[in-house]
View 1: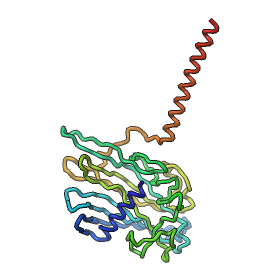
View 2 (view 1 turned 120 degrees about the vertical axis):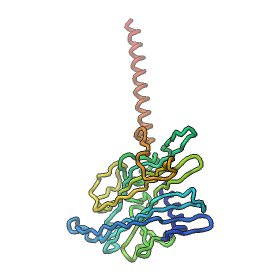
View 3 (view 1 turned 45 degrees about the horizontal axis):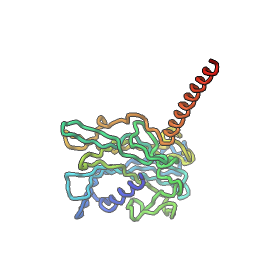
View 4 (view 1 turned 180 degrees about the vertical axis):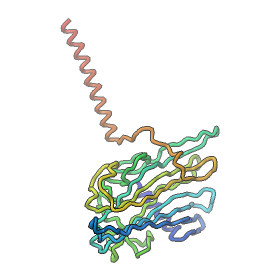
Length: 302
């Protein structure tokens, strides 16, 4: 599901935002409010034996957009391009990007009496299951058990890496690494998290922190668990966030973590939940059987 949501957002940005700061159409427009680039040049490459990794960069963009020319209801979201360059095409598969995240996506509404209600009712595909999108602690941001970002059980770890003309990230022009190898050893991926926006009866809020890290691919396990965030030491990490929490007093979205709800109890996957039920039923059945057997024995002895 997350990949589908990302695809829709990427297509939207590709058609409307491009690289412009403001692009207007008859039905809607997008503003790129700011853009920031972080670059890791791998200065200690000899120490880590990674001198074929020339750079790792993260381009963060802040967007304001809407589907109609109505500035009363903008949608806010941040997005990133994660990119790395090696000294040869063969060396590209020696590295893997893993992203970590924490925070919540939630809805909020204000009743007539002024009471504000916050509900965690948005789900995300994570490690093969749909779970509530609310993580108070750091977890690996992955749809499947392979922590490498944008890996796929059918296509593998590297197929969905993308490449384009150097410096271009146009979605309609990109090519997949698995379908065709690049001539210049530069590949990238994109992430556009859930946006924040005002709906008819509620507000969708996003309060998410991310750490995007690059590792030696051999150090990234083929399979792990969502909370296994210390599986290896990264070569470098970049931090970024997507925080838009609506303030009903100011009627604006703010970078406010104080109003972010916490899950009432840890999420229990369906398989584990069913196991708990089965074990409980077994214990109850055994207890009832034991009590009945004890009663029969006492009756016989009497």
